[in-house]
Image (tube, helix red, strand yellow):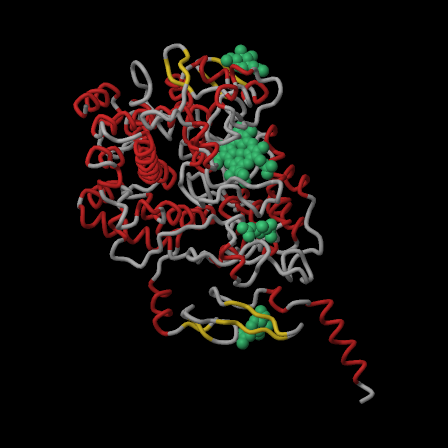
Length: 605
Ligand code: HEM
Ligand SMILES: *[C@@H]1O[C@H](CO)[C@@H](O)[C@H](O)[C@H]1NC(C)=O
Ligand SMILES: *[C@@H]1O[C@H](CO)[C@@H](O)[C@H](O)[C@H]1NC(C)=O
Ligand SMILES: *[C@@H]1O[C@H](CO)[C@@H](O)[C@H](O)[C@H]1NC(C)=O
């Protein structure tokens, strides 16, 4: 009896030292940890393929699977080598289909659908499921009562975010992307993703204003009905526009009366109004906004020719679905194709999933937003038609758009190389504050560690700092900052990770990013069996626009005069011709030859 106080004291001490037993993430292989008091926990291993106290013992079938499964790096190596082999495989349609189906299902199975957690709910709840104002979370937040910020390992305090960014993320000298990504690629990334990464900073980084949670083109049409109506011409299904120098541009804020974020010095004449409030930020965004505006009005014209009896509403709505389809086609066959570096030819074909278990729904994860902060892509300055713009002259300078014209911007951006994202120390100083913010926000949202995410996405956790960076200098800095490799945070980890050989990213960025990306693209309702048919897109003509979409075509169909080469990779001197193609072509080389493109287009009409 007299020992009771001692026991109570000891448990209290344990509580202080260890807190919640789930802090140490004891449950492996996606088992779910539930704490019972300060010392006991249970792992729920249901359907993980494992059992045992910590879900570590594989069932027989699981054991067979993991013994046979090649590592992600091996698969990546195979897909990015043996060009001749893949070109043969890609030309045999049943093989291409089988491999593409495997790519889609194996990736999207890593995403919980329906979604589970959010920043305020680390356990399943109706609130977390149903409240669309939140980004979802792939891993629950680190519990509040843990001994260290990252759970149970590492220092009691995380390194100062500014210092961390300065030592590990800040660019010393521009490091070009070895995959040859162009600024055309970088601005596409920014433009495309801002339709679903649209944090509600009034509520905090855990909340989003883009409640469509996917590719709904709210960045073209506005994220609410009122804004959409203001942007629409209300005639022939078209969007409002203005003519400058004989070409179509977005209308002005003054004319349409929608809110846009511009600093005071921007004159009224240069305040373009588009779907996304922030797209005045850089001319690269406004270039894409203009291209899609022109495309919308072009497509509604095509539809009107086929359906002279359709009213404004139907022409508008059907055009929007076509543009959503075009976007997904371009993202998979041009953008992801380029990014992956695969010699296997990716294919956008929703029918591949019709015989698979697949949910046509999507919820954007906060971690996806964080990992997509690819600010190292940005160069030191922007070269347009032999003029060089620094950040001060480039940011919020929309006069650049009409002054150079869309064709010239496309040409310039397709020829300038972007920066490498992984490998550390490549964030340009003028936008370093965004990287710092991203670290601070990740902490507010209590992200788990880089290694926790590696395990979640079927990768081996890094065993040491050098294992992570592949070098000595930055790994020493990391060691000092974090103490233990299991305490390295997600975002800094992604940016200092050793890049794969000759690649823009390290392993983690790709193995995490690809599942989110493909799930978001294929989970779109237009990819479901009921939608994916010509009538949804106004008939054969509309369906053909979706299935024939490419970056090159988007440009050629919407700039006046000779059409510039539009490419996600810069031309390579060593091997001119073929490498240019890797980004933009998928339907044969003719795609890239402007004259041929124009002829094809003429033939189509
Ligand atoms: C000069 C070019 C750029 C500038 C000036 C810029 C600036 C910014 C700023 C100020 C923010 C908001 C930061 C915050 O308050 O949390 C932001 C967010 C973001 N940026 Fe950039 N950025 C640029 C290029 C890019 C590029 C090329 C990408 C490529 C994908 C990108 C991806 C993102 C993402 C995903 C977010 C988070 C958006 C959100 O959560 O709402 N940015 N950027
Ligand atoms: C489960 O994990 C904990 C902590 O991670 C460890 O101490 C314990 O020995 C493990 N138990 C079994 C049965 O593997
Ligand atoms: C979603 O959650 C936030 C934060 O708790 C709350 O303010 C908001 O009202 C919720 N939205 C809905 C539609 O319930
Ligand atoms: C904006 O761009 C124009 C060229 O279109 C240039 O003449 C001007 O100096 C730039 N504005 C600023 C504020 O740098």
